[in-house]
Image (cartoon, rainbow, N blue to C red; front, side, top):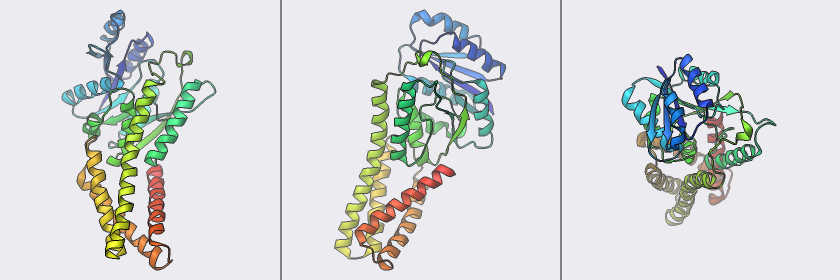
Length: 325
């Protein structure tokens, strides 16, 4: 399996050249994407060509676009590979990239990301931003990812098609990776890496307001589908209960209809295997219906309160499974 390093670069400094040299020494195939940098940076990219294949955007399109440009190039050129995305500012060590590669050799269907510890030296902006994003991501997905903003990520050719179909042009693309991997049965694995920041992260091109807005907009979009699905499920459950007076039938009909709606809302933005999705839905439906029956008929809990309790219990169990698998 080829080791391929992908480096999106917008107006990089000399640290990128040092990174390229070390990657080459570690036998990486290197793809650099010049994401519309000013012409004054042409010399750095000319040097980069000694170590890497350099692709170019005529204008700045954003990190997500740069990554997908590299991914498309790799898909067309190679068959069996591990892609490792690395930031160009020297904040990732090649030894840490190797850790991700070594893990993926035996876990080819997973998304592996670097997990940086928060230190006293971590810039305040990064600490606050990652803490807020981590919390909102957890509320939205039910999964606790410690470092949602890490740029050191790795995956194999097994999930390349999925990566290419994720929405996002700028930094929100990386958040969409995390949002849509779990619902596509892709496990997210965190591996601890060294925490490195230069000059209080002053070289970062991340715009606190503009890029944060795009990231949180994606999370809200993602969450809204689940919220709409739950509300629809619950309202249909009430309607069918009133209409049919049959608990199990009401639960089955409401869950199936809301699941179909959820699938159709999701599939417009990301690839999803419909067979696996509905196998999952049917399994949850069976468990859900059995638990609902027990709550109402054996513990005499109100039929509408029981629905909420059971849904909450399944959410918690699902979260624990995803977190510790």
